[in-house]
Length: 196
Image (cartoon, rainbow, N blue to C red; front, side, top):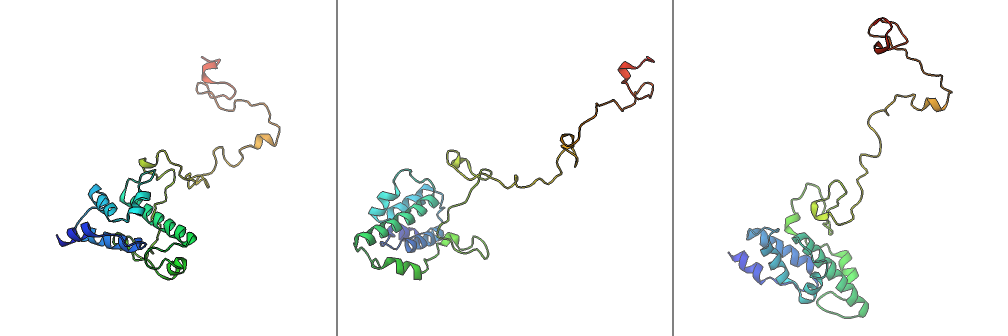
C-alpha cells in the first residue's frame, strides 16, 4: 500500500529521466502494477515534467508503456541538447551535460534486471523486427525484409547437376525410350500398341 502512495506522488526531477524511470519501475513492481495497464501508463505520465509530457504526447501518440518510456528518454535528451545549444540552464548538471552523461552510467530500470543472463543494459530498448517477426501493430510501418531463408538453398537445384546442359550442346530429337506396357517393345505407348 505504501508503494502505491509513493508511486502516485513520484515526480521527475529534470533532467534525471533515467532515475525517474528506475524508481517508477521499482515502485510499480513492489505495488504489483502491470506495465501494460493504462493505470500504470497514466501514473508514469503524471510524474513527468510538464515540458517533457507535452512533447511525449506529440503525434504519433505512443501506445505501450515501453513506447512512452522511450519517447520520454528521447525528448529529455533532445531538450538537454537544445538547452546546451542555447546556453540555458535548468536543473542540476546541465552545464557540460555531454561530459556528465558520458562518464555516468544510467540507473538500470527494474523490469530489465533479469531479462537474460549476461545481457547488458541497453539504453534503447526498442525491439528489432523484420517482415517475419513483426506484430500486427507494425502492419503499416516499414520493417526490414527477412532475408534469412533466401541466402542459400539447403537442397540441390531441381533438375540435377546437368540442368541447363541443353544450352551448351545441340540436342538431338527426342525419342520415346520407354517400353510399351502392353507388349513390352520400345517405341510406342500402350494406347498406340499395334497388338491391341
